[in-house]
Length: 192
Image 1 (cartoon, rainbow, N blue to C red):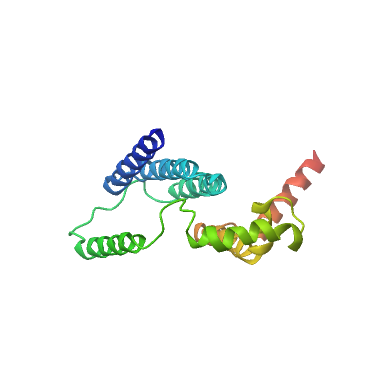
Image 2: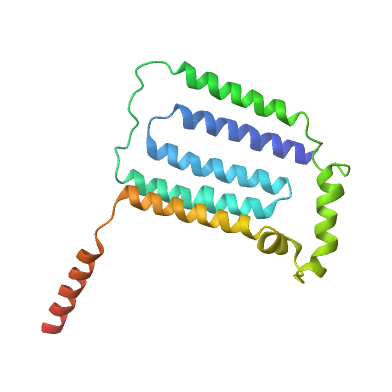
């Protein structure tokens, strides 16, 4: 019963934060609330016994994303431009997508159902075959680093490319200029 109350409180807070994010025009407040949203999501993952996913959400969603957005805010105006007309088409698309996603979950097995296909086929394979296949004692590490190694590599590449894209969008000083300044500074120190 306590777990249900905690889940309901977290979901209520998620909805309240999401509504505030949509309604606010001040981008700093939106950035901070996005970090709060990620932390609440991480807390929900903890209640679902997924600490690895919760840790990733907290680190990437609340940590790195918030820092990148704050860095971007230093280069843009602090408020959002006013919208001149109602955006009904995007609202309809979002509602239709949400309804389709909710409809698709109706066919899923119940959370933690021991008769679910993942519990009958996938999990027993990893539990039984990991020691013989790759001799890694931790099953989670074995799945992430070996069985799903290319998937994990792909995720790392996506995060790297996102960071490189942000740096490209924000702009940077050419390396030659930086090296030139460092060499001038070094010469000045030698002269003194």
